[in-house]
Length: 299
Ligand SMILES: *[C@@H]1O[C@H](CO)[C@@H](O)[C@H](O)[C@H]1NC(C)=O
Picture 1 (cartoon, rainbow, N blue to C red):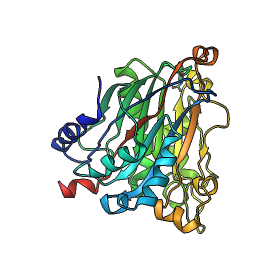
Picture 2 (cartoon, protein in one colour; picture 1 turned 135 degrees about the horizontal axis):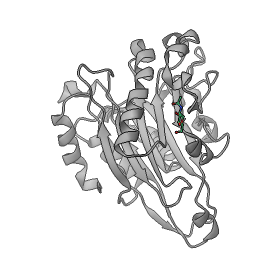
Picture 3 (cartoon, rainbow, N blue to C red; picture 1 turned 120 degrees about the horizontal axis):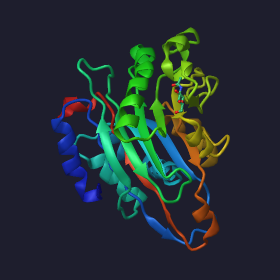
C-alpha cells in the first residue's frame, strides 16, 4: 500500500468517516544517495501538545519541530489537532522532502464497547535498511485516568496484530501516561506488558519525559516484544531527546513546543547497509498520527 502526500486529504476523509478518535497517518520516505556515515534507524515519538494551526503558524516553533523530526527515520507525532490538514502541510513544507512510501498495512484496533480512549492504529512496516526488516508499530496515547487498564489492554492489541500479520515484532510507543499518579509501582502487577517477560520496557520508570521542572514522570514509553526485536535495537539508544540542549534553546522555548519531550530509539542497520557505501538510505519516514480525542469536535 502506498500513501503519498496527495493522499492526505482522502486519508483524512476516510478516517473522519470512521468516527473518533481521528487518526491521520501519512508516511513517506526519501531516497538520499551516498550518506557518508550510516547510523542506526531512528524511531521517535513526540507528544506535541495540541499542535494546531495557530501553534504551527509560529515559524520558530515549526523550525524547531522540523529539526527534531528530521533526525528520525520514523517519527510519531501525537496530539496534532488538524481537522483540515493544514498543520501537516505546514510541517511537510518545513521539512521539505519528497515522499514515497514504506508502510505495508495498517489496522485500527476496535472493540465494542471501546477499551481505549483512542483506539490504537497499528502500522506494519518494511525496511530494507534495518536488521529487523518487518515490524509493527503501535502508537499509544492513553486516557490518564484509565492508563493502567489501557496499558494492560495493549496485550490484546499485541495478540490481534501479531496474529493478523503473523509477526511478533511489535513496538508500542507514545504517551502511555505511565508514571506519577497515573501508574504506580503496585499497578504494574495488573499490567500484562510487565508481567509477561517477553515485553521489554526500553524507557524506565525513573526517566523524566516531562518538560516541567516540577514533575519527574515517565509518561512516554517505548516497549518492544520479543528477543529478536530487542537484538535489532542499538543498546542504550532508547532515550529522551533533549532538543533544547542540543539546539541551545531556552527552557521557555522548549516549553512552548510541548509539555513532553520527544523519545527516540535506534534500530541496527542491516549488514547490507553497513557494507555498501553507495546504498540508497531511506530517510525520513515520517508518520504523523493525530491521535487527539479533541479533534473530532471540529469535524
Ligand atoms: C514468550 O515468547 C515465546 C516465544 O514467542 C513463547 O513461546 C512464550 O509462550 C511467550 N511467553 C509468554 C509468557 O507469553
